[in-house]
Image (cartoon, rainbow, N blue to C red; front, side, top):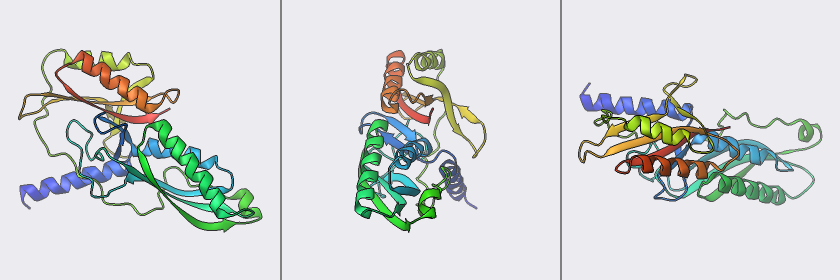
Length: 258
């Protein structure tokens, strides 16, 4: 097996682990914000909103790029991150009988749109599928989809960033960045994505040096409080780290909303 083949295999394996762990990172805010949120906590929040909608039972929900051909985001974005751009929500639901299905679909669309806006996701398309109609006992006792189930077809994992020079910059940059992050209101912890599903989270602060330019690249993985919009907390984190390390390029990934 060639070195190139081994690298490709390793990148795909890493992408698969991320997809079945916290999911592929989704862009938060605008194209220049440098902010992402892991798919799992984002979808959890959208599912919570959907389950509050009268007249439906949620069967599946997924968020991804509106254009599947969207390229990867440039470093220091998280590995396999969806490039900034419009997103699409796909949801499947069972409708409770007694009213037109279109009314239940309208309420679901409004709830998902509002929840996505609260998170800071640029959702521009919502595709809804009615899977079945619930009547009588089924309507009263139907179970919703569990948060770790994904009934909609999964697309291929996004590409990983190529390997580069990941040596940490010398000096106290890491300490300065960590202190800046922990001072931001709404940050609960520096918490990285686990290497394997169900495993312990890895360190939530990653500093590296870009070989071509010598620029410092900083990625911050944080768990945030649900008391503030994740987008606002992530922006404050990026601004705080940029103020502490003015020459660095900074990206922030929200790994949990609690």
